[in-house]
Image (cartoon, rainbow, N blue to C red; front, top):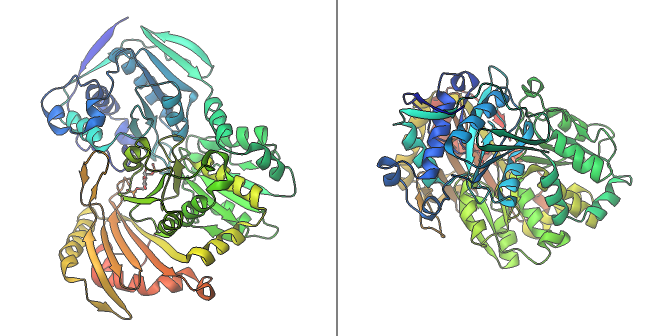
Length: 564
Ligand code: G16
């Protein structure tokens, strides 16, 4: 057996988006499609490519990336359709690339946070996550691939740019000539040529890490009392992790985790933990005899939604509440270094940071932008409006970590979720918040909307819209304070004198046409006005967005397809 070199040609459109390359399964099933991308990753990180790659790369991450020869690679996916076939390909290509060892999750399953955990724990040079996150799965669904670097986090833009450049010029890929698939079902060690393939239990290391962060005794005490809790794994990757943590280790009753068996098509559902797609959980939490606490996670286990009885906690509020209550959790008791949030995330966490006297960083959308801040020790907690929260324990957002953090707070405070959040609002003020998504917009029309608004930005400050006046309007650009890299064009912001804010940007994770995201935020310090209907409070902002961006005209839609 040996390495075979296969001639190939570039496939168009292999540019990683907000979080890796996501496309319909049928696109990934084209000959050489996955192989081209994997080879481009390996070429880029080994520095074995000259010319366009080295020319397009700047910054310390890429320069210091270890040569993968002989190193460990972590590989796993969310169990969606095409996962098993893709893993076999990645293993054979890793053998040909000269990796020394691959750690792969049993059954090909690893949540994204578990991949990050394994990379860090075992000193791997990187990892490959096979997932399209919350996008639907199955033969007509989506698939995806993402490379994580040695700190356990998503590759920064310098690396993804190098990978993309390589996909545009690739002419050959290398693969180990071995037809028999590696058995992924049993934990143990096998060999693929010189490559050591170690099939590991998907949950062991991750669960162990969680025990070092949280007060498991207090949570066990809570879960074994009258407290009722339900976590929806949405037939995606977190099922085995949720059962292990909550039912086996923390003693919650069997059945606490629902939809806990990972399925290739997620049971036909859309594994996105929000009020629209996690509707079964929502019905339980808003129904009669509702549990005290509910949570859901997404396809690859990095997102979370938090619910109390008859109560939805926005992801932005969740970040702020976790930050304000960090002292209840052993790992964070000593204090937070700082907090980071993506730009469209509400400014609720800013007020907590201000109260704690720590720095708050505003980054572009994408977890990769938190990596440098975490590595440099500038921040401890990070969060995004897109149902992502995490900390310096790994370099990915982490759905079940957020659930454990909430449980730890609930165990310590013994109040309801609603009481905790409402008390938080009384202390810091409430940031009413919503995101309106317009999915499947024609790409050229979405671009025209953004271009049109971008041209109007300079003229907006000082303009009045009803009771509101524009304070500032800009196209968000970010300079990383650690490595100085710049990321421009990250979303259009319109800030109002009242403190309210509108943000418009195009999603970097969709696979069909374009998705326009409109983010709306209104601040209310008056405790008497903190329990109003969100849509009513935000309606004037929706009207301003329509006036400045002509959303109905460009999207050809009367209303958003999803509101979160
Ligand atoms: C990914 C990224 C997140 C981002 C989200 C939405 O999450 O990791 O950082 O906030 O997509 O991005 P966009 O607004 O560009 O669609 P996930 O859970 O899909 O990997």
